[in-house]
Length: 158
Image (cartoon, rainbow, N blue to C red; front, side, top):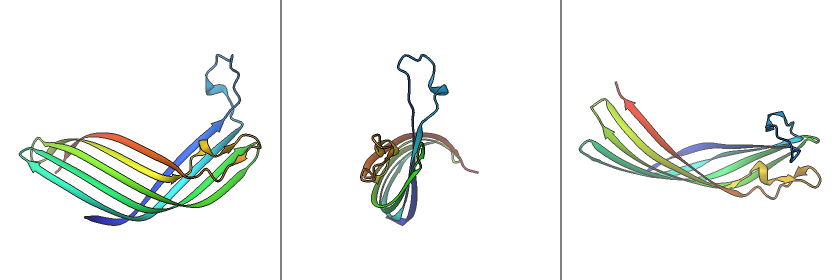
């Protein structure tokens, strides 16, 4: 069993541009009319559980963590007008990890792992744009996000 305090940040930037449908140039030359930014700062208590098994040169491990977090959201819009909103939100976070490790020697091991993180109560810049009056829609700040990744590494201990 593991526990402690965790801080997590999720940031999204969304530029909004007018584009000519027949323009063959890249978007490098397009100047945005406005830019929406959404920052989520989650802090809270975390509990977790870890499982580990070693057999010969192989080691397997799995972890699960739950975070009960307070999310201080900052939403900013810059461009034709400047708008800001600061919203408090409840954001539960779940994290799963699994890895396989091959010990090549006492000091060197090769590992492959997967991590998945689920977050709720997240403000995303792309969902909070009010196109009719160029403002921020503050009641769309509770989205779910799932992020996953693969890690591959070579560990050397001296």
